[in-house]
Image (tube, rainbow, N blue to C red; front, side, top):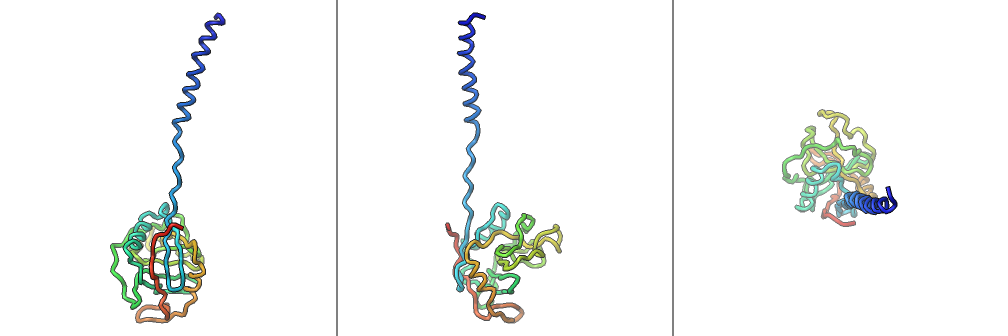
Length: 203
């Protein structure tokens, strides 16, 4: 092959190689920016608690919780069950210990890898695993026995859907309040611990 023909062939091949390379590079999609986590602030009579929600792990539970927040359902409710060394529970009763009406219960999402450790926020429920509505609790200790271990009535566990990112000192103050029996309810704070407002926040 003559030098002039070889030169022409190289001139044709080079642009094709560059074009293929450019197309291959352009075809790579840009990585999507991670979504900012959703946080909810509970303004309580003892101070502010901020909870970061895990919609990636418990989407139905987080959507349900946020609906109650956006409906102002939690405003004026109390932490009605406090057990030091275990958890603080709220979101269902007003200051007169009257239970608020709720939307239908949601399916349990406890098999999501999140654990009931100190600071974890989980849904309260009855003995029926799929009975959670509005009430939630904050673990004040590592409560391994509340974790999911099997899909049956005894071992479904309790669905963790978030964790406290600010206000652990407030949680600790609440867990230390004196409690009493109130009618059929035990472990009720003898001084009301009120959730004055719950709202989605940016920090």
